[in-house]
Length: 320
Image 1 (cartoon, rainbow, N blue to C red):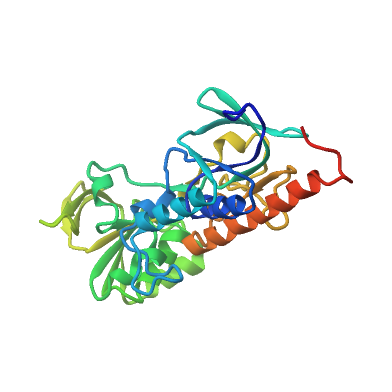
Image 2: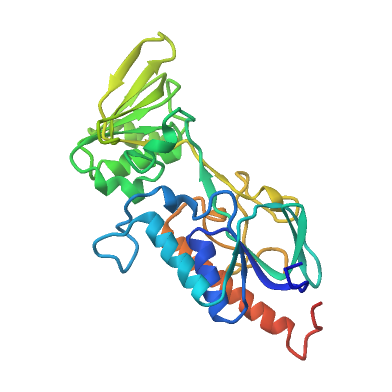
């Protein structure tokens, strides 16, 4: 229940671009959405120092600033925010239940926009280096590294795709993989290996990020996993491409997912459960852009608004 003891019109799970856009649209529709911030408030944009490809910002915009602006915009129209993480989810006929910090909240509709978390290497100074030459998105940040050497860590389709994309900007792309062959599909692996700007480094792990005096990346320390030999590679950015984990754990018992745990949608943002909608990186393993997440958040809020209007119509049984 909410603080007034009534059932929420809509609860939005997540505050990345999808969740905040959904909050703006739902609030403007007078639905007074309750938005749950989760364990990563603001999503992956909060680790991006500069966003150059979000429409309307010709000079670029700071990632955390963009998120803060969207947050304020949603609050302006009446969205309410709560720093809570969803532990359990139970669908119902008239309303759905979300267990949050030991308390059950109830809502006529739910928008799942909990995003996906990039997998990282877990090195000691990783948090400090994010946004300072360490990133998980070549499409987002590749253009900042023109005519300088960079590296990509990984060996699957994503790593090869990122490396190929980065050749448009970087002077040299080192593709670092723990094994002696890529896990990527044959066509992508061949394309990466045949590119004159891409140099594979086999059987090797990154063991340390090396910042300069300003805290920006100037290299990585490597360890050959066969010979145990250590070396230093000078690069201006390391792109970690070892996958993402969709934040769908509380919903997987009820909502279908693909083999990697991403929620599956039906038409628009509708899921298999009436009144439950999904948007953003939690359903999107391919594009993973701020603008596509925002668009999906808009769709989810509009779908939820129309769903609620239909539920409350005199020709439909009233919800609780």
